[in-house]
Image (cartoon, rainbow, N blue to C red; front, side, top):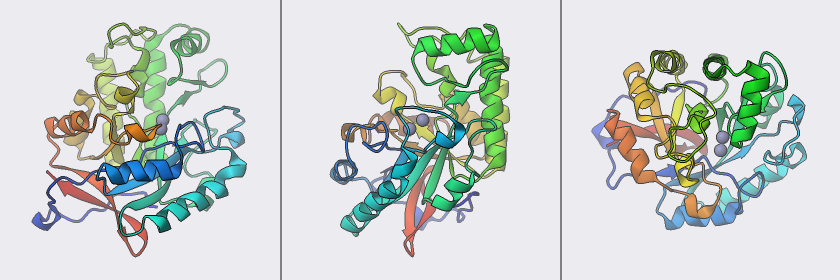
Length: 310
Ligand SMILES: [Zn+2]
Ligand SMILES: [Zn+2]
């Protein structure tokens, strides 16, 4: 597991044709996915992907939270063993990696936590799903609209900008703390901001305004300075929440300007979504001016990030 990105300089030899693709943000029956590890591997292989990785929602019992969508702490070793068996079964045909999607929850959970570092997966995606408001309990920004509405009203006195600001604060803190590889679905806070036709506008924010883009710019700077990879996550498109990946095209441009690297992912919760909306995700990456994207490779049985140029 690397905390900084140290890539070799551009080499024409790294170019590959056709473009290699991976899917390392995936969920299975171990957390809130619908299919098992073998079904996800088979789907990745059939789609011609070079690698699949498993990123179960890391346990949050230690943070005092009870949910039905995280891996249970007592199943961590079973999860690692099962991914290890898949790794052996698919050797030579498909690279299989063990990962986690870890919640960054201010003061409660981060990638530096001893249990996560001891588990030592091949990679960690760190995501902000939870916010801790000035008043009240932590709540998720990724749940149904009513949940965000409750958090906004009770926790932030209805101040949308304060809530969005707390999201960007959390992302910037998370990047500063490090201990992980990939920033998960950056810009997820847009989920209930009403930019999708027919979807609830709980959060009253102007995604193109100075406040939102200014905070996103701060985050882009912090992420690039920490050498973290940012995933371009098509999961919201696969589930019908968004018509663009996370982060948005405008934030992708900011990330490119600051020198961050990006990795395409599907946040697949079922085998059929293993490469869902990848064409649109790749277009977003290319349109933002990136020269390539990051892929997980293997060297001496260890994960090694490499950049593939378009
Ligand atoms: Zn997530
Ligand atoms: Zn996920």
